[in-house]
Length: 153
Image (tube, rainbow, N blue to C red; front, side, top):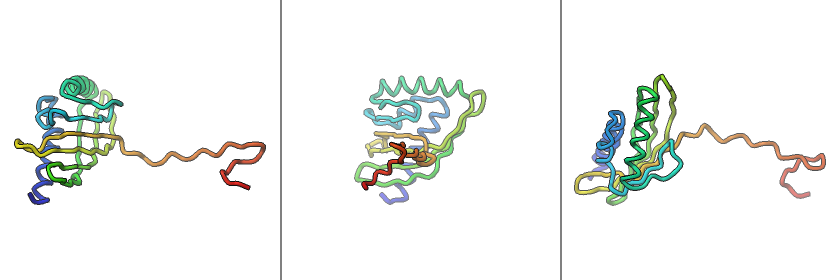
């Protein structure tokens, strides 16, 4: 398989998953996932494992999305690498919910796919808000009228 074909197939798999999400179609998303797919979602702290946990998570997530307002998602072209029957896609995603409960953000995503007889299936998906930079360091505490610098002498 050429690099261009791999890129096209993985991009198509990613687009199908997000298109299903925008259409509130959990079955369409699940078709893109392997049976044992795990998720680190943007809004939840725990690892989501197995079909039952994914179904419960998607029901809650889609209900919250419906209440928030219309959603747009823009996916930047992924960096895709292949490791035998595994492909890793890293990409940025921009989302925006419109009123009544507007919010937006930029997310960095890593999705891992496995090649199966029926096509590429996602085996792990990891989302996180793009950091805005390192928080500034606090001034070191003062001791005995002198500022500690961590240096001897």
